[in-house]
Amino acid sequence: HLYVLENKEEVLPYIEQHMIHIKTAYPKFRKRTKWLQDKHNSTFIQWLRFKVQSELEEDNHGVSENLRWLAVGPNMAVPLYRSYLIKGIKFNIKAQDDVRTTQNSGVYLLAHTMQVVSAKDKNPILSNMGFYGVIQEIWDLDYKKFTIPVFRCDWIDSS
Image (cartoon, rainbow, N blue to C red; front, side):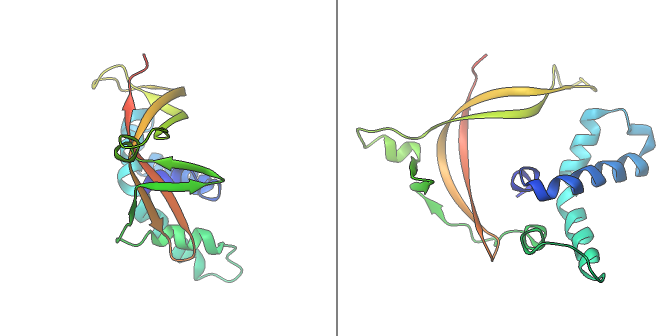
């Protein structure tokens, strides 16, 4: 769910607000990038739910229907699929590819991500990195008014 939230355009302003909130609440850690990211990851979902709920209680709140349901979170019952069609392209899980002559379980993702040198690295670098993966599971997260497919992949070290 956190991955979905962090990749939705309408959630981005809330991510920025949340980071400001964390830096204000924990001023001693404001320059420790990894600590801030870990704190964000562990608290953002609950913070967003509360923030959106409080905005919904205001007149002229401007909260979209999609944002409302994203903040509520997906249904806990998540269906799994062996194949999934997105914009005319059929994606398969690896187990499905293993019994077919055509293969379509490979994916490539360009991500803006944090690069950490070691577990002791307190100031990692943010940059774009490419990742190659093989789809192991396909989940369909149900947010009541819409669904979002998520691929669980085994990522291949391309370095």
